[in-house]
Length: 311
Image (cartoon, rainbow, N blue to C red; front, side):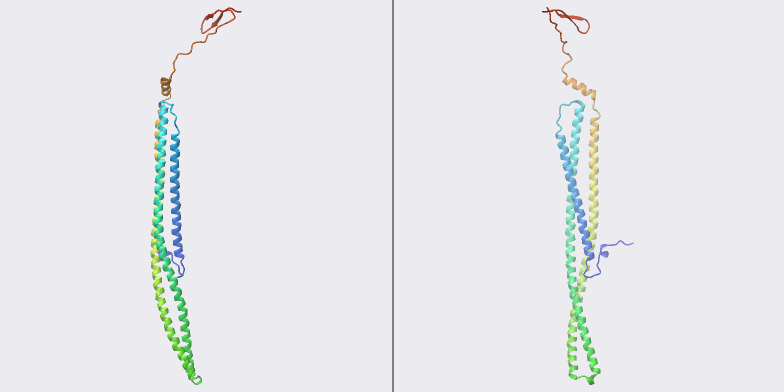
């Protein structure tokens, strides 16, 4: 089965019609709309990635606690460092999405330029064809009317010649003069008709040739657009994968840095650098009053702290 082509599929049987041209023009226009939509998707995605990167870095910058120490302090510091790297990954992705958007924009602009030139050329030739065809059909009507007039005069002459006995010779001569003028007029109109037929034939051939070129160009542009769009969408998914892979790699580094956290080691390190001493305050003595001795039991045994006179 042969593959159908635009150049065989988008014609109009009406010489004044433009259904095929209009359909292909709409196809190219709708293709540009999709390209513009995907370009906008890439631009918005780039903004989202850049904004996320900024917010992520701002989050890291606002984490300024510095009073931790030991393995937990290192783990937290490494988490912030790798979070900054994740932010950089998203910032780079934003720049890459911008590049995809620019590629789509440049490609769409070039397609628009090429299609516009072809559309204008076909439209101009079709306009010429319609004008030529209008003149041709008008002349055709006039030519056929002249022919009918001439035929009627010839028939009148034949009739009058067949009935010569009842026809005044001057009347026959008048009809012959009219027929001669009608014949000259018919020949002139026939020449104009032939010239216009030649003109409309050339115009039709020029239009069909340019329309064929436009069809071939539009199919090529459409094929390139589909291929280019598919390629850029593929690049988009590759970016998605790269973001995920890099982010997962940094997350794994975070896990590796968090895993060695030594609870007892951090406790001992804190004690080593921040201890205030091991000696507790002495026991507080109870000093009796009212003039009598008071025994206070502290730990084991009784201790007499003081004797006072009670008043």
